Length: 300
Image (cartoon, rainbow, N blue to C red; front, side, top):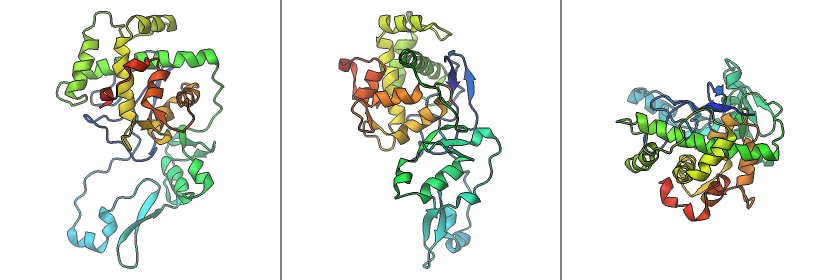
């Protein structure tokens, strides 16, 4: 299956405002054949930010004193309540209190192979299972209703990084072209991407055969080193520790799984020591980056 995805929602400057969990759901996904599309200005096309963005609200001080929950934030799946001393605390939200989905795009498939109506229903349910074996294993699997995902064959697995590497390179080039005063890239990142952008040998974005993508990676290997490191840095956010957890991978893999059936197997293979964490060295190896070219400084 040769499909690609246009990821939506925002990249703001050097560090993305990433959620602390596999939060929320992408509202709309556009699928195409493997043609890299240019992201909209100010957009992070790699990591889907799934979350609700609260508008600033002016709160009367007297009202806030009477109801401390007005300015108290709880993570997904929890709501604020006050205790006997009128102090705010977070408790698990009742899933039945969540609003119904407005469309299929709001559905979530959990790792328990159960379709949840919305992200609210999913995280509220997960919260109620905290501390249990079932709750520990429950994660957001992918965006959309649960469905049959066909097995990924060995030859198909080898195609995944070919498209992903090329796409990441073109994403960075597009950000560079549009990043005048928008802080989509840091100054150091711009300098590295500029070298790729100005290289006459760069394979332009387009619907390329797998043979051409493989040939370009072999001939222009150095152009792919930074994009692979950059993607790792975009995902490694909570905390920034040089390892990717299932939660940190979720914003990338959750929208991708329904389109690319090798996604799950690819990321499982990346965890070569099966410790449930993907180190930078493991990540780079999955994308064909040589051991001597792995550089932690490239992800900062």
